[in-house]
Image 1 (tube, one colour):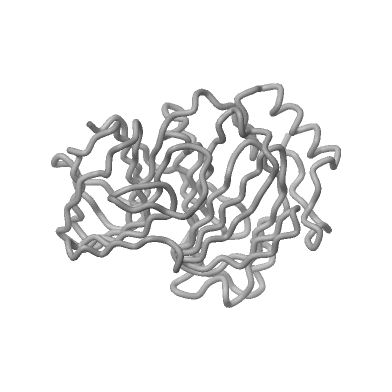
Image 2 (cartoon, one colour; image 1 turned 180 degrees about the vertical axis):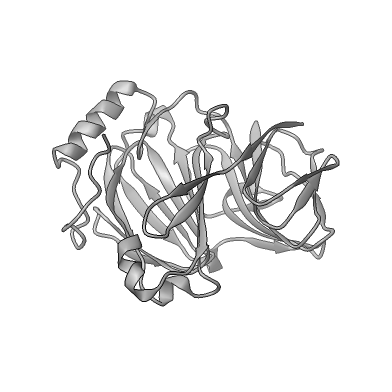
Length: 290
């Protein structure tokens, strides 16, 4: 059963990098363990604007960031010393745990190939027992992820978890799933089920469910429902995700925790320089918001 429809809010990260912000939402903070959803682009910047749009080093605690490109290229650097390019279909899975910082840089023209930079950035809250784990980073090339093209008009790549009989090699801390799907006009498919909460995000195109039409930037939230059928009215790109709830989480800026006092500690740590910067990208950073 459809529980809620969330329409993304426009947010400007500055210098031409605009996003559709889907989660958290005032009436729905999370879907399973997923606590943050941003859809950036597609955007193409002029050479003189590329440097200004870079996301300078900034910190995280208590979560994993999941970066997935539909087009373009991003250069990731973090305080573990990792420097990794991410291309469409790859997965950058960064677990912040007790604390990490990273940057996301763009180069012209590589970052804007294939129709412009288009990025899905999702965060996964960590179970309480893993919130203070050591920070870690893993890159998974697109070729390592399972793909299904069953001839029913729906192509899919399983980014993480298990769904539709596939299992991703991406290591997670709690039960979840995350899919990139491409639909031909007229294609229909039921949701995978198997999790208490699941959602469909319309990145491109137009879909129908139970006689209602939904457009890009809308998120449809369901329970564990395998009878919920989605039909593509036009050629569409949909991101499907869900999982098991972890309980209440507090969020401030880039910090997530089950404990308010831990958020306050993270704020003080960043302001005081106690969270290290990427060793090769340490000349600037984003200050703690007021």
